[in-house]
Length: 92
Image (cartoon, rainbow, N blue to C red; front, side, top):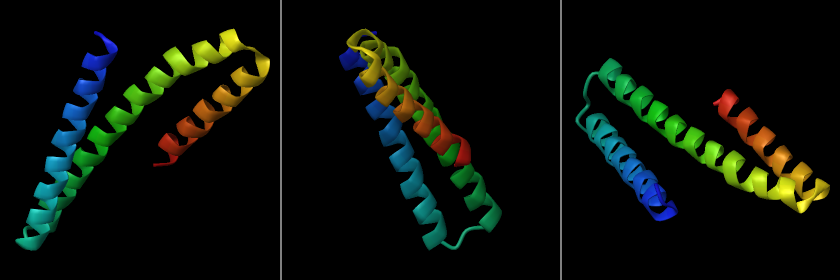
């Protein structure tokens, strides 16, 4: 998959999630059953986490690799960024 195709695939996923969130807002406006709304919130959260994991994989495959080639200082910076991102994902 080319970089453009990869970007388009991510944008399609994000637009689908955006539609899902709009649907959740509609459920709230329509005063639908709370458990049904919570189920949809959970599904949207999982979908966003999936996108986050793809982005993290991209960072590790490209940015970390490029930084390793650039030298120690750049490598440490990118590794810290990845570590911080993983910590944020684990806490969410």
